[in-house]
Amino acid sequence: MSTATRKPESISARAESALSRSTATAGAVKTPVAAELREPDLVSIVMPALNEEAAIGETIANVPVHEFEKRGFRVEIVVVDNGSTDRTAEIATDVGARVISEDKRGYGNAYRRGFKEARGAFICTMDADSTYPSDVMPELVSRLHDDELDFINTNRLTLMTNGVMSKRNKIGNALLTGLTRVLFRHPFKDSQSGMWVFRAELLDRMNLKAGGMALSQEIKLEAGSRLKARCAEVPITYRYRVGDSKLNVWRDGIINLLHLARRRLS
Ligand SMILES: Nc1nc2c(ncn2[C@@H]2O[C@H](COP(=O)(O)OP(=O)(O)OP(=O)(O)O)[C@@H](O)[C@H]2O)c(=O)[nH]1
Ligand SMILES: [Mg+2]
Image 1 (cartoon, rainbow, N blue to C red):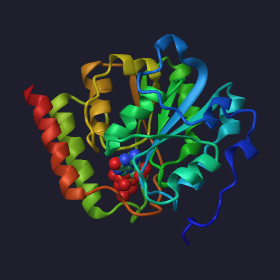
Image 2: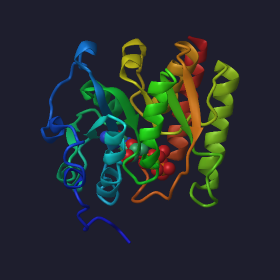
Image 3: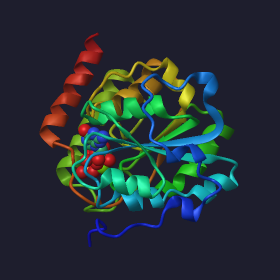
Image 4: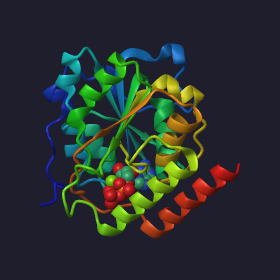
């Protein structure tokens, strides 16, 4: 059943006190939030979204704001839209997110804009398509904080049940991850996972350039290989996608391969 017409319960109705008050307004900032202005108890959940009206409401409403609050964190949700032609922006605003509109198309461009807008000292990411288990985020942020880690990647591939990801995507993920591990002595076992939890200060040392899907492997290469930040990877359950995929398997696969090759040769 499509969730497009159902309006999910708003986050503010479920957890008024925990959601950062700053989330209600749309922002137009293009320079990054200065390091000293980042709020130490704020978690910024950054989400790129392109025509995700079927899933974005539930995805945001399922963010475990109370659990974050119990652990002493507030939450802001930053959705970066690229001219969706459906009700994505409207639904996201209704359920309490700050929606940013980025002119430049692309997953990487959306994330790079979202990172500039994020005000929290901690960043969590995920797709706006109901696939990632946001309920594990509070525990991962606590772990990052308590174990003095910089970056946690999630691994979808070990706990995944059959059918959740197509065979073609599984092969593509295994190929790209294997190659990345060989070429860069990469610590992660899922180089294409879209759920990361990390300290915002790491962004100040990263050189993120990818405009498209390659941003996912680029951020892990920056954290795990170039910066040799304190990293961990945790297995997560991965769920069926709601709504249409924006991944173009062949085109994005080749772009990702070229990105790896260029990076290795530079
Ligand atoms: N703002 C913005 N978001 C995008 C763009 N392309 C993809 N996204 C979003 O980025 C997330 C990842 O895209 P997906 O289509 O889920 O890609 P994927 O996870 O590799 O593929 P699936 O396994 O089919 O979900 C989703 O939330 C998309 O809506 C874009 O050009 N602009
Ligand atoms: Mg997805």
